[in-house]
Length: 308
Image 1 (cartoon, rainbow, N blue to C red):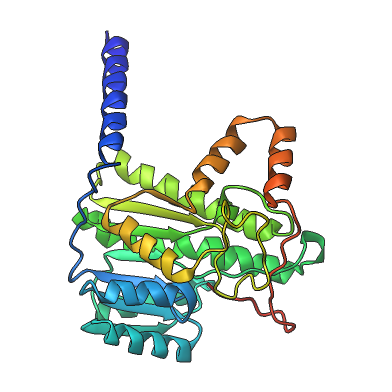
Image 2: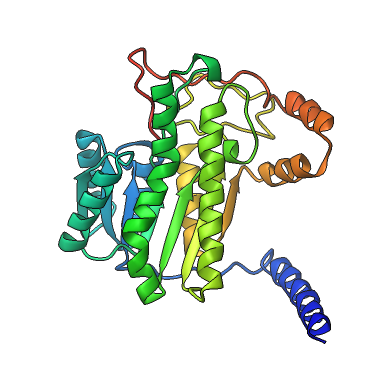
């Protein structure tokens, strides 16, 4: 009997969710009000992090900026204040260092309060083929792109759980859904970030903490300097994304509690095909779309990596 009841419940809810999704094609989802929320953005000294800070600032939030670039953060803080932020705090923090994350997190809690919207945005790329990448750079890629998410969650999630309120935003990549030639360590770190964020989101739901939302962002390559010189074979299908456009889409996803945001929209189809067709056809389509071509990012000659 339980099997029958549960099966009918799943079928009815499946129909309703599809109807609901169809309705939202014509009726926009109501956006939530995040005025007064404390928003922490890692990697906010430049690129998407800076642009998101400006977008959040216009929504009357309290901003907390983290980066390893002090001057970059100061400029982001200045621009955020111009965009309307009433309070902006910035902290020097190496997110790859667990102890530093915990130390700076404690400082934020004392000086600002509990973080209610956490945006894990900091990211790096080695720009080298797997066998050419030094072990130290591979380890750093995993530490920044993946492990840092573990430490920030550990630091700020307890308060969200206690209040059953918050939002966790993971800025991953389309390279976290589909393997890319020449980006083995980067793909591994982004796949891990997606799996981690999705798993924690399910864990929160299973424990009744449905007031904590999760948004996982997987964009194609963005024109932020991280992949300078990267070209696309079919710009209509897979354009190099404008960073301002991406930042606005991320903020909209947060305001509407969108769980997965793939950019451009063709990535939804490409990801579905990748998971549905046989491997040879996957390779063929990848070659056709230009996704299997060697990708080279322009890390500087000293081995330092570009940040998001």
